[in-house]
Length: 173
Image (cartoon, rainbow, N blue to C red; front, side, top):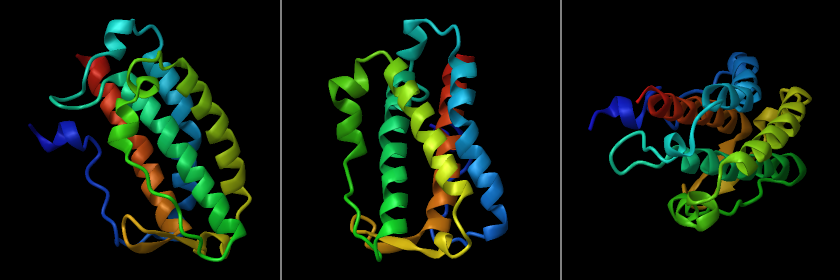
């Protein structure tokens, strides 16, 4: 299996400098994701949504459900960091979540709606944050590190493009 199937936009590098000058581009990536997914998957049959992007990978539906789960958690983590002093966030097992019936068997439409709502609110929040706000952080016990919101924004910009890349692979099959 090639890395291009697993990481269609390359790997995210934790610890790489998250340059604040990229914040507007990162916000734009998050803002555009729901529309990009809707445009890409418009007209997909249920069979296409059940294709995988690589051997042992998730189906298109699972990718979309995962994005809704992950980005809802990310949005909440941002809000916690904005309202509390270095809160500890709750990790979750994304693979186990993807295996639950609502993450594997359900039509992706509800998760597309969740993504639209979360991304509208998240984008509004992001566009109204100050430079100091982006320096706030939370502690992630699974990673055993404190993450600044700037770094987390860079991560979720990448995460959006990463899984959109997976959906593009499915659509090209």
